[in-house]
Amino acid sequence: MSIVRRDGRERCIYASVAFCQEAGLATLASTKTTMKTLTKQPVFLLLLALLQLSTTPVEAAFGVVAKNNVNDLRRLVLGTVALPKLDNPHDLLSHAVDTGFTTFDLARTYGHGESERIFGEWMEESGVNRNDLTLITKGGMGEDKYGDPNRPMATLESIRAELAESLSALKTDYVDMYMLHRDDLRMPVSIFTEWMNQLIQEDKVRSWGVSNWSLERIQQAHAYAAANGLVPPTANSPQLSLAVPDGEIWPTTQSMSSAGHEPNEAIQWHGENGVQIMGWESLAKGFMAVPDLWSDVSQIDVRKMHERLCNGKIEIGSGEWRMARIQRAYCTPDNFERRKIAKEIAEKSNLSLAQIALLFSLSRGEHVSCLVGAEMNKHLDEMAALKNVELDEEALHALGCVGVRRQATDMLQDVMVYQFAPPLVNATFALTA
Image (cartoon, rainbow, N blue to C red; front, side, top):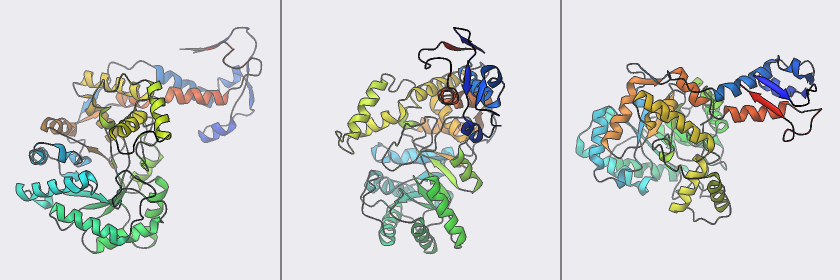
């Protein structure tokens, strides 16, 4: 790695002490350091290493490792939002059980209750043993379908009524987990915790969780339950995918997707406190399943979508509104690069792009599950094959380092200020590997 300045004059650099402290590294003895001295400092070496890592060609050895039962199929939660659109949803559900799927995700808002009705009819007609299944359903949003923060506030009675409708449609006396589909920041977490424990006492719910809650709010609920002898939330369902969304995907939703090989703080906290993560949009609405999907969407297109959304020029709930939010969130340069690398790994490993994307999310921790959708039996077979494979370290690092170069470059710009030269745009300052 060489650093060159055209006029040959010594370059002085100011280093950010705050950055060093945040990075957990030794702070520089002086904020004014010559290049010769600074290049020996841990913070500088770390940033240059990040830049080098992010531009290192992916090694031919990367791929997947075969390992029996490395991924319990209970960590692949079959979503049901598409059931009303299928020609034969009962056949799909039966094949899912025959393949080894046991956990199913439902919600009162899916098809206005149609998904729950179809699932309940299938359970009754198929003769499947209810005790062999784990049923998760969600409620608490009332008539709101899109996460309106100003929707009518829920009450214990309204949630109890929604749950009763769900149980009736599912033809069962209880659900294994009941999740609050959205948070409501107008209400303290103590109220929700009390309500969910009341439903548990009524034997209608075996456990409870939340969907799209921030880390701070679920921590508060967990602490309140512990302090008052109540059952805490044992699951949280945020967006989690190899594709890191740029901003909020849907109104009042949360994401735990992030760049980097290691799980972020939120994912780590959930694992340390026994809270399962059930990531939705694991395949980013097809972005991480179809290699060329939306490849023609430019950043100019994305900016135009963002402007139209912000200006209220697209009708909420329309097909255009949905597509604009999806593409604005997922069609980013970093995500296109992640998909490119995942595709390479898939080709080398004789797997699909979707399988690689799911394996990346599952690698975040044994407490992490993926909500997956399927419209054909072969999709179920494809996902079930993940039971016996995992990504190797090289593949994880290759996928995790995407975005690190940009972040490291931003940090370097914060760390370095040139005393004897014009701004960076006019200076010749070359970094070459």
